[in-house]
Image (cartoon, rainbow, N blue to C red; front, side):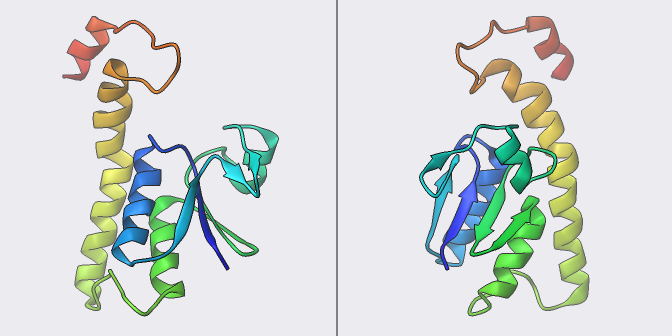
Length: 137
């Protein structure tokens, strides 16, 4: 069964899952397509794979797995020949805490509320809102 990561290349969360696959030496594909069909963000086809229209979505055979941390845990269990998670419970908890903190807070502050004000994947690029950038800084 092949692994496909649904999501645009610029997404930090998609890149996180791709890096996880790279570290585990897994063969995978990625992009906004499924079986040769382009999937538009937030479309009904996208929401059929992720109810909130978010990325990434891991497609593995008949299984769809959503949310970056859950995808990484799934990959660790499904491909157990190498594990990237610590065996010690206290260390697992620390990894889970920081993974959640990065996803919830650091990404929101650094990416959503700052970086995307300066550089946007949206085309055409919108003008930079200097006041919003100053507030974010």
